[in-house]
Image (cartoon, rainbow, N blue to C red):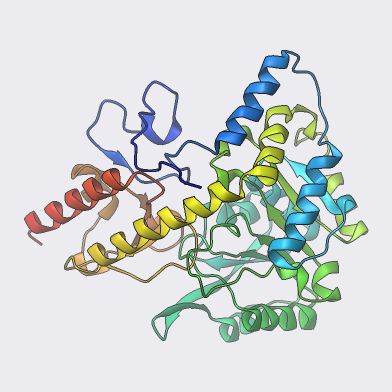
Amino acid sequence: MSTDFDTFIDRSHTSSLKWDRYKDRDILPFWVADMDFKSAPEIIEAVQQRVDHGVFGYTLADEGLEDRIVERMQNLYGWQIEKDWIVWLPGLVTALNIAVRSVAGPGETVAVPLPVYYPFLMAPRLGGRQMIGLDWVIRDNQWQLDLEAFEHRITDDTRLLMLCNPQNPNGRVLTREELETIEALCKKYSIVVCSDEVHCDLILDRNAEHIPYASLSEFTRDTSITLMSPSKTFNLAGFGCAFAVIPDGTLRMEFQRVRKGIVPDPDNMLIGFTAARAAYEHGEPWRQSLLDYLRGNHDLLMSEINDIKGLSMLPLQSTYLAWINVSELGLDDPHRFFEDAGVGFSPGAQFGDRDYLRLNFGCSRSTLEEGIRRIRAAIAEFKP
């Protein structure tokens, strides 16, 4: 399938969170994780047909959509799930907070990888739980979890590990061996895993393989909450459609109990359900074209960033979110420095590491090239 990702789409005057942050300012937005591409034409057509129907009452996820999810998990990841395990949600940030409150009691401890997508850092505190860190470190020129140090931090009341795999922001895809080491620790200390796998369909490294944590064994199946959504893959974030896969009935019942009366039931997700079904039924050729384009953007960005003095970037295995080390520049506020140069990153401090900036390269090649030009020009003029 040939898809045009090169054409720049003007998102001004569309109430875009991403672009309106810098409204009327000459700053290119590379921050929040939505792409600047039109979604697959089959998705657009399905949504248009549903709108043409003209009645937008309360709705349910039809069996066809849930059948597609079951098939998708089997076909892409060799993971056998049942429709009854699926819990529909308006978003995955919501699910992170529900997981914390349904697994760990007040004052108990939740383990969180560092650095990580910032709602992971907020969820334990918002729920009145304690937090310990599981550190990402660079070994052999690759990001790795320091699981040995993590074991020494586990407390008697550590109840939940919040995993992010593929990882946001560093792009790692955990190997089976790494996941099995995590499984062994969780089994030893009776820890449940909430695994955010929203980027699982965006594997850039052809040698990497996404393995759902819950698919490893009966133990991981019965002690896990897996979070997924078509939102990142098919650029559907504005539709608020996500789901958790919770095989264990007791864990699933508690998850549902905690959400009740606080998180809306899924009967108001009509357009999200429509888009999700179209994505899972017809979106695979578009996804493959997207991956090819993102790989091109990734390779360009990594080559250019590593050619700029003071910046460095390790290759990503997944996502369209680059994690760029700016520590050699010695800037007090690197985020502000690059905003002043016309480039809007996500600040690394938000994820737990001030030495980095995150850049979203889910955009047209021309937009990325202009961003790189501005970055290079800013550093060329920089006098420490």
